Amino acid sequence: MSSANEDPDTTPSRSDSAEGADPARVLRAGVVGLGFAGTTHLDAYTALPGVEVVALAGQESERLAMLGETRGVPDLYADWEDLVARDDLDIVSIGTPNFLHHPIALAALESGKHVFCEKPLAPTGALAAEMVDAARAANRVLEIAYNHRRRADVQYLARYLESGPLGSVYHARASWTRRRGIPGLGSWFTSKALAGGGPLVDLGSHVLDIALYLLGEPRVTSVSAVAYSELGKHGRGGREGTKTTGTGHLFEVEDFASALLRLDSGGSLQLEASWAGYTKDDDDIAIELLGSTGGARLFVENYATDDTLRLYADLEGEPVTITPTVHVPAGHHQTVIEEFLATIRSGEWSTSFGDYALHRSRVLDAVYESAREGREVSVA
Ligand SMILES: NC(=O)c1ccc[n+]([C@@H]2O[C@H](COP(=O)([O-])OP(=O)(O)OC[C@H]3O[C@@H](n4cnc5c(N)ncnc54)[C@H](O)[C@@H]3O)[C@@H](O)[C@H]2O)c1
Figure 1 (spheres, rainbow, N blue to C red):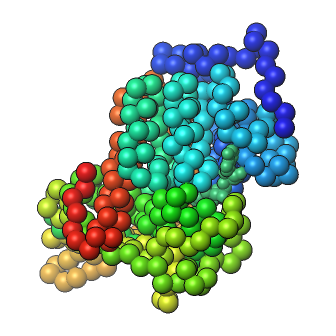
Figure 2: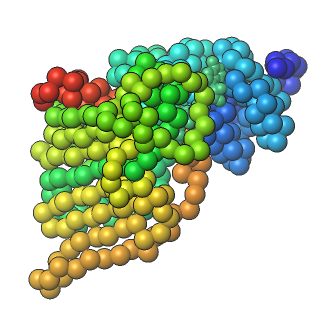
């Protein structure tokens, strides 16, 4: 692996990137991870103006060399520690297994870098809280890759809801369910210690994020949940063709979870996440909002990009169903990274320390606790 070899006369110091700095200066990013997430981050930065990826880290040496070569990244590292130790980075972008989000983020934030982190923020709410505290203490942005919220159909729904056509939204459903979609049976994904959980943290975190966002960020006050592990532990339900790092871990997580969440708005949200199950759903996201004067449904079958929305209302006393024509282009990761970069350039990030993601992590903690103990639990 080559390491950084910088000319102090031409390499901008990290302090240039602090608040009050020239917003036109090109930001310097380091990306950790070479899997789907890390590569997507890398490609998003590469496609965006005003930022360059100067360092990349990951443990698959051939892939590291290939990505360095094809994306023009000069400095390549096997271990994240060597990348984060550089003092010329504005940004560290984390696309590693979940258990590494916390140590990488803390090291990066404490050395003054802004952090873009994959979801879930951390395997537990306690670790996530330390990350948010570190961002606030360092006064650096901590943004999370809730990319699906940036889908054009979700954004359309958010705009539609603004004028209040649904009246009082009293209940919502949010689910991401798969027929056969355990990512990497036996990899870090199915290790409780390395991932924090199964489909609930992997897929459920995305649909929880979308639902809370569309509902206007109510706080979840309590949770009553169930979780099952019926397929993965018998080696069933694995997604064909998934390639993830690390092997040898047992299936220690749930493959199905369902939870009723009570909201401080007075309403409720049914959250369901499943990597595998004997159902028609292949790989389906659904968000439904039930209001006193209308309803809305987002249904994304197998990452569909068209015909994903239905709006329900009454017209002249009769029920009508509206089908908005919204095409969903690819590139939601790029959108959230673009927003992250804009926040850094704005110099205004006092509300960008990841608190909203911490709440989501605490909700997921409560779901597991409720399922384990068989009772309703309060959200911290
Ligand atoms: N937002 C999304 O849509 C989305 C999609 C997929 C995955 N993810 C998230 O992204 C993260 C990674 O998932 P993935 O599917 O890319 O995983 P992966 O296993 O394919 O890749 C993980 C990468 O981390 C690297 N890594 C591990 N230990 C390292 C170390 N010590 N130093 C440097 N690099 C190290 C590995 O070498 C590998 O390149 C997870 O948190 C996952 O939840 C998010």
